[in-house]
Each structure stands twice: as C-alpha cells, then as structure tokens.
Length: 438
Ligand code: XUL
Ligand code: CO
Image 1 (tube, rainbow, N blue to C red):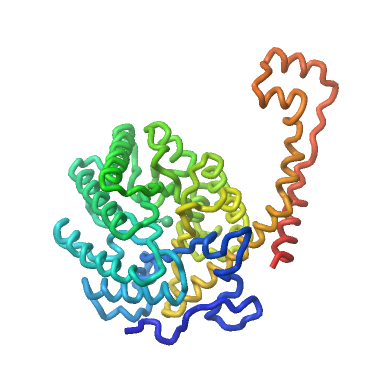
Image 2 (image 1 turned 135 degrees about the horizontal axis):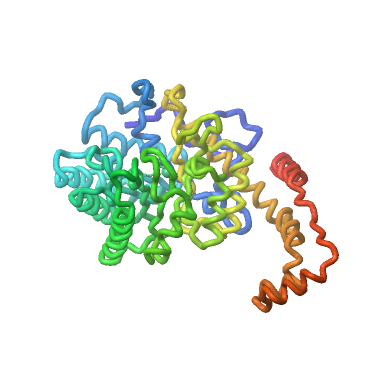
C-alpha cells in the first residue's frame, strides 16, 4: 500500500524549477571537494516528528492529517514503518533516527514492551535489506512515561535507575541489530527542579555510573559506535545536567568518559543555552568532540524548543563552515529533529518541510565551501593573530617566557596599537558570498 501515492520520488531539478516536489539546490550527486553532497550532508529523517507527531500543543489537540490515523497499537506501528520506508525512498534520504517508543507501543510490562519492539525491529530489519536508508542513531525515550518524573539515570529512585538501564541495554541491542552508526543520550529529565530536594553530586555520579555501564555493555555485545550526548540547558527540567557542550565536556572529562562519547549538537538547544549554533559546533570541534547534528532552528521571539525546519541560510552556512572545518561529520549526520508547524497539517507538508531543510543546508554547504576555498575568514584571522607568530608572541605560544620577562617587555613598550576587528566588513562579505556563490 502506498501512503504518499500522489507524490513521486523527489529529484534535483535545479534552482529554476517551479516544481514544489523537487530539490532546487540539494543535488545528492554533486561533488564538492571530492565528496558528493549526499556523503557530506548525511541527512536523516527523525521518526518522532515525521511519523508520530500529530501537531498537538499544550493548548490544543492534534491537527495533522495522516494516512495511518485510523490505526492503533501494533497495527499503527507497522503502518508507520511501511510509510517511513516509502517516505525515505521518495525523499532519497540516506538515514533515519528514532526513540524506542516512536517505533513500537509500550506494553503493560517491560517484557511486553520489549516484545513489541522485537516485532517492529525485525520488520525494520527486513525493509533495510532492500532500502538504502540506514539508521543514523537510535535512543531510549526516558522522559515521557511518568516513571521518569524525577529523572532516569539521575532519579532518586534506584528502581527507576535499574529500569532505565534495562531500556538502554535493549536500545544498544537494537542499535547492534539494525547497524546503527551512533547511539544517542539526550538527558530529557536528567536534571532537577529545586536543590531543596536534590543530591546533585549523587545524581551526577549516578549518571556517570550509568554511562560507564552502557560503555561496558556495548563492548560486551560488540557495538562499536560513538555514543553521543545531546546537550540542552532546560525543558523539560529547569536545570539540565548536559546544559551545553562545555558543561557536557567537563562532565565527560571528570568521569573519564571522553574516549567513548562525542556530542550531538542541536541548533535550538544551542540557542536555548544562550549560544549560537556555530558556537556549540565550534566548542565541540576544537575539542575533537563533534559527533552529529540535530538540524533545526528555534524562533528568537519564543523562548522554547520550537524545533523548526532549518531554513535560515545564514545560520546553515556558519554551521556548515564548522562541519567542513571539522573534516565532515564522520559517522554523524544532519538529523532533522524538526517538526512541521501545527498549521501545516497536510501530509504533503512533510515533504515540503524536508525539501526546504535539505535545500537550505545544501546552500549552506556550497557557500561555506567557497568561503573556505577563498580563505575569506582564514586569511583575516591569520593576520589578526599574526603577533603570535613572531617575537614575544611566538615566545608565549612556545612556552619560552614568563611573567618577569613579559613585565620587562611591557615596561619598554611606548605604545600599544590594536587593529580593527572589521566585524561589519566580514558580515558584508558573508552576504556577498551568500548571494554570489550559487
Ligand atoms: C528534545 C530532543 C530529542 C532528542 C532525542 O529536545 O532534541 O528529540 O533529539 O531524544
Ligand atoms: Co534533538
């Protein structure tokens, strides 16, 4: 059965195309610096937003019209798998990602939940035999069910810790079975509401114990993929332990976990943390910790995680700049952790949204690549820091000086001359590249 009957395979038709169901800029076969766009961008469809979300919000019920709406339970789960693989094929997308509860309904016991998962996982496995679409990552949803009210691995209740361990154990097994390229940990409720009732040290120690057990189990079953922490500062908890990349990195370093973990950086989580998307990517990149990306965008007028499709060309360009400078995303990808707006309730909007995001990132890729090729920022930055390539600056960098010598140097300085940072000139250059590159 076809779920998206009226829609044909989405093809690249070029910027002049007026066909809404065509890529205008994303040309999977186009080679950029020896790699195809498909290989560089590694787009992924987020199962939860595309096949589960119904457009409901805290003020209203779902609005989405979906061809699987009439089904329930395992039948619904199976229909979603069928629809998903049709969608992946029509979009010609290389990856997808899911939470355990997205693909199969929870049973009344853990055993029943695992049995439901087994049914759907083996169905997905069958589809994957003939589909080109691979699993970028899976994860365990440890935030929706009321048992996680006070956290999962950071719950004050040891039973919840144990239950969560069982969920991740199963998740790692599923990752192995489906050949996942990564495994993600988003600490949805791993944080706290008030210190009045919280043992912060024990909670963080427990989270580290949990991660070490996950590392051990992955080794035991031969699952050799990066584990990815997805930082987010708040929502649903007030204070989340994986606030941002810098906080997450300090945690991983303190608990000796840096060999196994990298970061999955989400644009809207970065902005919620008071950073730009590119700041978080840069922080991860310069520390060798950039694993994957949840590609979306927030809304500067709203203070929450709006998970919009990433259509902002400026941001996507600066994000792709970091990704290219990182030498790509390795086993990571650009996962559209993004949902259509509540008012975009037609099934075809799912296609429009992904086409919009893919084209906008393809533009970002091309512009970023040209900026790097022409060394637009590199040359400026090299010149800006040139005082550290000679004289006293070189001595500082090479560790050949000390406070006494620096004082002597400073005392004989008659004048300190700074040069302009040229922010506005650089912004104008980026605009010029954005308009002229394509
Ligand atoms: C929530 C979020 C999650 C993670 C996976 O803000 O981003 O969907 O990506 O649990
Ligand atoms: Co996310």
